[in-house]
Length: 406
Image 1: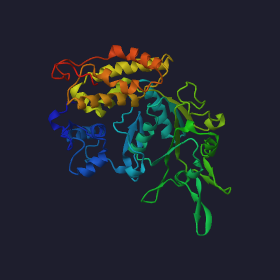
Image 2: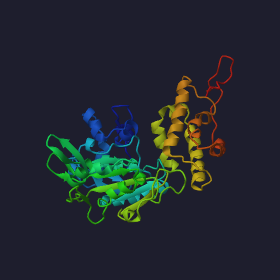
Image 3: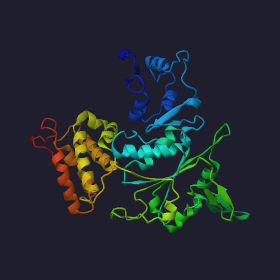
Image 4: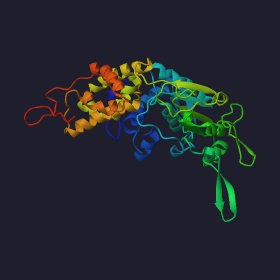
């Protein structure tokens, strides 16, 4: 079937033309279809020709309206999840800017396994390198599927018993006050129509937990019947369907690579209580590049060649890190910091692009290397892939010499 390009619809925010605006709104404007329609009530999000084609394929041309709210679903990593229309967006975890479900490499398979487990409300221990999208995946699931979510961060030395109970003081003396984790796990999210929807409870930096913090979570993580002990001996059951996901940088055995020294070994019997343990790998550049392009439009306009260069350099750096040839980390955050400084340099030069832009911008990541040997090793890996810019696009002083300030 040929679809007439003239029947595309335009984005009311930027004029982008497409047959369906859902993906564009998320990637270009960090906005859901729901939010877009709320601010632009008369603007369509799907063209009539696509809707007609859908009706024909479904054998349902008589039905001229979109599906009812209770029939809406969202697909994540090939798994369909129902969207709960009774849960408002502000009760969910926020959608990460420019988030995309990986479609290539090891991370695609990692997330596929996680999505399958989410469909069955399993508990998770997800670990991996910094910047591999561990927390982002659960944020995206919560937001897109309208699953109410709360996030709790492990902080070394902080008593997490307050997540469950804390002492309260008033004129009558002392009492026990229920904490946010207990109420969310036991009661779920109460919708306006009186339904209780189980929460997604995300615990970050789980491998930073000391022994007492980890023990406080033992009963909650029980795979057969999650429960929480009260301060005076009572027991509260976790609402069935509640998903508890813990994320970490290590596999539970503590720091084995010398770069996550604040992590602690976790009791094997506690780790055994998680239904699913998965390692998340770094993104394939085929997934990472469009995210970076969406985040740095000035580079797309002024120096589009840098994305191929930084992709090649990033791939080689990560290969060396995984092979233990380079004792460093190079996460998605590091890539973004590098590209961000490249944009800053262009901005500082009045919109002009100096030669060797990425080499000049690289110091914001190289200067984070732990020692000179690591820094020099990283530079040797990066340098063959970094060049570009011409004298015509460079920035010059009145004498015709290139600025060396950058």
